[in-house]
Amino acid sequence: MSVPERTRTRLGLLLALGLVVVAAVAAGALWLRTSSGHPAVIGESPTAFPSIDRSALEPAQARLVEVLEREFAAPGGGPKYADGLVEPWCADFVSWTMREAGRPLSNPNSGSWRIPGVYTLQEYYEGSDRFAPAGSGYRPRTGDVLLYGPESQFSQHTNIVLTAANGEVTTIGGNEFGEVRIHRFRMADVKDVVGYGRF
Image: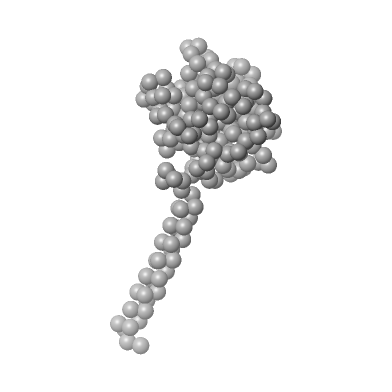
């Protein structure tokens, strides 16, 4: 075999290998993508609101699920949930949906229904004796608020548990890629979970 033939053969093999790698990466990215085009932060990001047996919920939980389903179907932007302000709005989304469901929170610093920060949200749940730290053995339920630290895949963030069973949770949160999004994942796969604000 002459040198040019060997070079062509190597180039052909490299090109074929490159195409296989590109196809594998594209398939993996497609698996993680939602209709909005953003990848799941962890696990998967379903594009449909989950089926939840509301007859098994307390009335306040059922009201919250109704609000969350409505906001998932027709979400607003951050200022809607942040009382007109432009700011990171994951905690605002939690505060707004709780108020809409008839379970308003109370900012420990201002008394307002709106708690704009994750640390202050944790402070609120601790002060109302409704905080369950990660590792305490607490099992989340519908309506609980999940709080993440800065080292988690979500970064410092908060969202609301829709369903929880067998170590897997489905959550809904605001300001996830600038949207209201649903994620389903195994809790064991998430780093730096701070704890839960019990509903």
